[in-house]
Length: 202
Ligand code: ATP
Image 1 (cartoon, protein in one colour):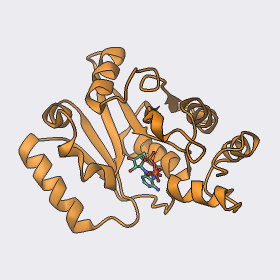
Image 2: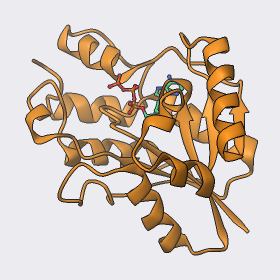
Image 3: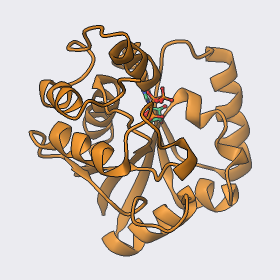
């Protein structure tokens, strides 16, 4: 059985929090590969505060470039509309084949809301989950969600209490807009790309 991780997000921009999440998942759950999938952003959100799909993809490719276990997929960017996770996972399952177990990787904040996502029963019965704790989340709230979900669906969930990095893309966009240094929050190649393309300078 192959074990593949899927890490979706807006990655606007990708930062060390995302990379640590992917690397911890590879190690903790014995994954062969993590596929990072940037989401298509609503066209109305695409002004200078946000980066285009192409820029977000390029930054991810730079960040993943040095890592043998991490790849980047254009699947959601190439869809005509904003795509649902269940459609992306169906596609990935078909792509990797039935002898592959897919692990959807999220931070605690996203997992808390997962049973409200479209086709939640399908998501929670067909796939496994790897959850990376994120600073600011409430332990009891997470335990409660975990119990509710595992008892309703029998979902396999691997909780990782590992590298906690207090980094968000929102914070990075604000810092760039204010001319602050982000070199300890993103890989050097990503920092250079942001500068060269004048991203997030509102
Ligand atoms: P924004 O600030 O723009 O909302 P973000 O930093 O939360 O962005 P996303 O692209 O929304 O980044 O995140 C993709 C996935 O990575 C989500 O599952 C999120 O929970 C997780 N994640 C993001 N930052 C961290 C972090 N510092 N530690 C652990 N998980 C994280």
